[in-house]
Every structure is written in structure tokens, then in C-alpha cells.
Image (cartoon, rainbow, N blue to C red):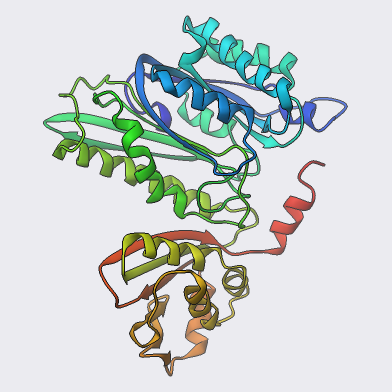
Length: 405
């Protein structure tokens, strides 16, 4: 059920043919997949969000940032196939209309609806197709609709991405569920990624806004596929209180428990994005230990995971660990070569300032696995972090060369 796993959340979907309209196809393909979804909560939600750091923002991002100021969100409306970015005043009118159409169907105010779009940049939304799609999606809302919603938001993704978890907080069962999409144009500080986590926890007003950035820093901001940052990325957490637990207050042990549960779901979703990177054949996990700080560990891990030379070496099974050391060196994190200990697939390849006598054939076999773990212990402090990426393949070039055609 994922995004509808938490009590009080329902989802509905519709097939509008948005990409066909966007790319100028002469007809909507037969068997058109769902490309619009609505997620609705029975109760107003305490909501937090973080968005793209790109200076070029889609209309949906700007509208959501405005709607979040009132913190009474109760629905999400999401379309795939068209990003509604670089579309001027018309783009803002269309984003607002998506919110209003959804609000009218759900008996809400427009500022209680957040909207998201993903897909091709620079094309106007086909509102003649989206309007009936919103009506259809609102009409078939179901607590069982989470999986269909995860499929509806996909673009070049090959699989729907969901995660869910149940945690105990002060004797109450609290549910957390989520979905995301993202496959290419993915880079730290978020990229063409949409992610939504719902929980039925009762929380004090404003808690989600206070913790959402910290959660993103430990999950989605540690994912890199190709180094490009998009115009539309959004990560939202909604808490609707349906679990009826004692309110979770900032700074409490209960808040720490809830945040750890949210982080776990977010990390599961983040890893699924890296695993499904466009054209990817391998998942790369980079762990940095014993750094001067967590922030420096995050920076070092992200840099290694996003290195094109590391990614191509992994794709080709080339046991060139020197590329990893090089990336650590230019990451900006403090580094002392004589303290660095580096392993690939559990094999030590570098320590005490130089490479070690290691079986390169064994390192090659490690690089050829579907999942590769790189661990760099810097020997400088107690900071640690993980980042996730994927190999860079010929298929990535093909997908993006043909994206609008």
C-alpha cells in the first residue's frame, strides 16, 4: 500500500495521455498507462517539504511553497509526462488550476492541495486532458491505491518505488509509507525526483517542517545518478494524526523515534532511485567513516558516488581504485592519505598512504557484482555517511538522446 499504508490516506489514478499531448503525438497510444494520481488524507496534515535548489523552478514548486505556508494540506495531485517548467504565466495558471480542480472535487480549499509535475520541460500542460483525469482520480480514491499511484508518477523509471514501516511510539502503532520517482537527472540536493512520505502520527504543528531537511540530508540528498539537477524535485512529508497517539513534540524521545522511522523509509526510497538509474546495471554504495564531521563524510561520499570516472570503471568492471582516491581528494573533505583505509567489495586496496598488494582479478570481480560497496575510513574523527549511485552505461546515453521523441 506504501503511500496509503498510513491510516486515513487514499489514492486514485487516471490515464490522461499527458506525454502524448506534450510531445505532439498524433494520437494517444493504446493501453496508455496511468499518468496522474491524487493522494487524499481524511484529516489536515502537518506537512514539511524541501524542493529543488535549481534557480529555474517549475510552477508546481513555487505554488507548493506558497501553499505550505498555511500548513493545512490534505491532498496531493501529481502528473507525469510534463514538467510544467519554463512555461511562464500560463504554467502558474495551470498549476493553480490543478489545485483548484482537485479541491473542488474533494471539498477542500485550493491551498490545501499540493501539486507536482514531472517530465518534459518547456511544454504547456494539456489541461483539456488533465481536467477529466483529476475528476476520475478523485472519483476512485482507495486505501488500496498506493501501488497504482507509485506507477502513475513514473517517467523513465522501470519499476515503481515504494517503502513502508510500522513503528511503536509510546505504546501506539504508527505507520509510515512512501513513494518516489526518479531515474535520471538525479544529483545531490535533489534533482528530477518526486518523493512523498505519509504517516498517521499525531505531531505538534510545525514538526514536519523542522525535520524534513535533516531527513533529506540523510537520504535523498545522498543519491546521484548523472550529475544533473532538475527544475521540479520535491520531497514532502505529511502527518495526519489518524494513529491517535500522544502528540509527538520536538526534542522528545518520541520525536527521535519517529524521525528515525521516517529516515529509514526515505533511505529505502533513495536506494531504489539509485538502483533504477537510467541505463543502470549496478548499484554503488559509498560509505565514508571516521571523517572530521558528518557533513564532510556526506560530501566525500557524494563526490565518489557521482564521479563519472568511478561510475564508468564500475560499469566496465575496471579495478581502477585510484579513481576513488582521486575523487576523495577533490571532494573538499579533509583527507590525510597516511590515515586513509579503502576497501572495494570488502577487499583492502589502499592503506597507509599507498596501494596494497591485492589480487586485481578479485577487485575486478567485486566491480562486476550488481551491488558494489566502497568503504573509505578517513581516520580523522567520528563523522560518517552513505551515498548511493549507479554505473554510467551506453543505455543512459540512448535513453536521454531519445527522451522527447
